[in-house]
Image (spheres, rainbow, N blue to C red):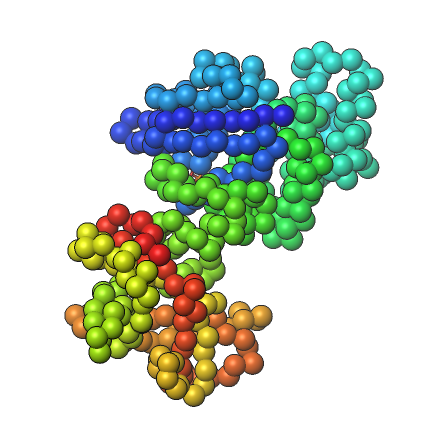
Length: 372
Ligand code: ATP
């Protein structure tokens, strides 16, 4: 279907650089999700690919053809926006048929196409209804149907589920994933919801302040973040990120978590990655709440810590553990730990923590790049 390539693409709005030196290759039939906080440049990048914005610098290619100067209509792309703009005076059938009628496709062909997508989207029994009597999820499916009926090379979906309630969102998510596999069209899906991104994407492109931070499979993005931003953005709750400094203890290299008594032994390989530049820039240690095990009886090599707060989330509990206190502000240094609800503790208890060594991360505070 389509292969998309962005080379050194830059887009500015006055003083705002919405997209900075963006390089990305999307393979044929791939499902790529653009993920990032509000205002990071996701929609602008999508609009550049669609031809609704023009890059100031760089090139955009679709199937090897440079499309910078092609109008949106000539790019063979279907765009579904966050706000599904259905024609209120047309019924579902005519809404879906609209793009085909506009290019004067034969009536029998239109009929076959509309019925085909209506079946896939499970809206065949609603074809005669007007949008005003449809639920949000149904309207969204009609908007998707209108995009699908064209069978374009590329689908661009900009937060297409933002207006749906939680249950319909989960159902529609599954539907979109199934559809994309069935149709096999290259798809770019924009969201700021990491669960949506993780569950839909072949690869996730994490964007921050117009810069592509990392592109990788959901597993790579979650488990091997290449920057402090990606590490801190993914996960609920997010990764624990604590200041740290390398030091020596009893002749061995250790990493001390700042303002605490926690000293972590580090292997020579990990030690070697802490360059003098990184040491000067400052270090940030990272570990996810699920990569820490808690035990009621602190014993070596457990790290003793005090329960500061308990957040019961149903299937799991999140414990905020106090590791120390900032010397200047007296604020507690906290670490979040995920435990099973049967692990019963009370605020004020001292328990033991153990970090999964394989899952420890370290970042350069200044460059924000991953060291381990
Ligand atoms: P959201 O998730 O909130 O939709 P986004 O990641 O899609 O955000 P963009 O809409 O691409 O972000 O915006 C990126 C930056 O460019 C923002 O700072 C935004 O204010 C700015 N911007 C986008 N479009 C325009 C425009 N037409 N004129 C001026 N500034 C714009």
